[in-house]
Image (cartoon, rainbow, N blue to C red):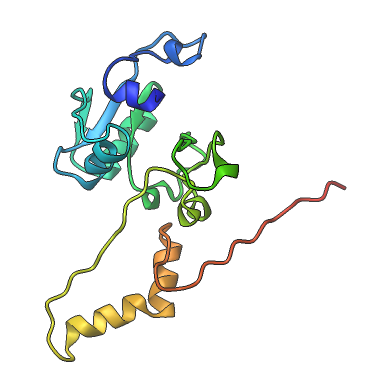
Length: 178
């Protein structure tokens, strides 16, 4: 509900979100209205309603990253694959989905990690599709075969996305203190 209120301009400063030491306005940086990211926000956060114009409209995900890194009060939305290499310099929001089917997960907040996306616990996700109009066997069908193979799905995994045709194994890692 807080993110919904930010995008509707009902909440405009970080102080309203409980950051007492930060009275600055929230600067929203978004891509063009036709971008898939905007569609995800409109569908999953605003439930089809329009949002207030952002402070900055970026031409690319890289521009959103740069804007957020250079403006400490900025909020930007990008695909998870763009976060690779920036996790130490950017803070990502952990979100909760009140309609999640897993009752044990209700009220808990999850970051944009592959495991949480795969489990359906991180609420801002969208499906990616490859469409092809190929007939018989040619370069297009070869590409589709490669993308769905183990080698192609490994590339997708390494790019920070969640593989679609390969089984996902979640491994919990614990550290022992010495």
